[in-house]
Amino acid sequence: AVGYKAAEPEHSAAFVQHCVPAILEAVKEEPETSVAGQMLKTIGTLLENAPASSLPAEATTSASNIIFQLFEESLKRIDELNEEKQALEGDEDEDDGEQLEEDAESEDWLLSECVGVVEQLIKSTPSFLPLFSQTFMPLCQRLLANTMNDDQHKHALCMYADFIEHGQ
Image 1 (spheres, rainbow, N blue to C red):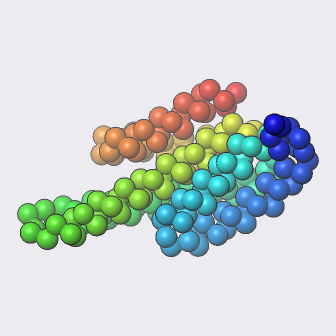
Image 2: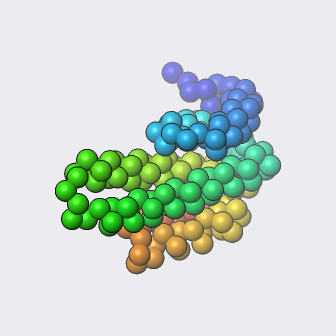
Image 3: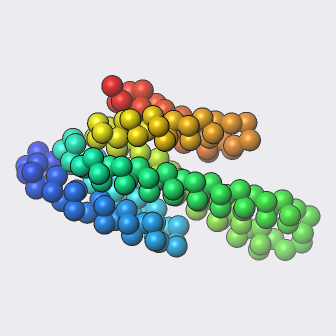
């Protein structure tokens, strides 16, 4: 079977140009982490299956800004959750601690989906490469700080690896 990328490249590019910006706008407004993560997963799949350079420069810049904003907001929520967990240490109520742990895992999953979109943009959209250098490279440096956890280190290394492998 032939995938839609090979069968109808102009149609799949048009589909990506139509859908990705709309989904990104919806993600920006979505309060539920799980729903936002699924939307990001969809964007990653669309980019993976579309012909290279399907996303125009303006949409690529917008995608970069939105993904960066999602990253920043999620990192802030993770910091807040960690502060709440520390405040609860020694507390007898295990339900609160379990809920905070679930929320932190959900935020990490959202970051994983953000990383997936960044990786697909690196692989499929040459106009994203300078945006990655300007925006995401400093973010990766922050994610590799000693104060960040192993998952955040992993996210940074995944983005760096894709940039090194596909960013030329």
